[in-house]
Image (cartoon, rainbow, N blue to C red; front, side):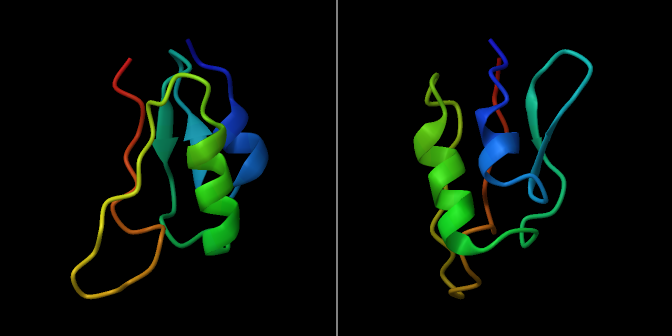
Length: 67
């Protein structure tokens, strides 16, 4: 299921491929709050934010949907 919610919340960070799978186009494309809202708003729970030991911000390590 590709709902596109992440693209709505953080359009400069997320996009969808031809199969409507979420992809990260720019990990720093939107403010941290928008990226977190996109991850939290994913209806399938397919997105997450990985902790960055260097403290680079929320966009780093944001993964795309597996299916």
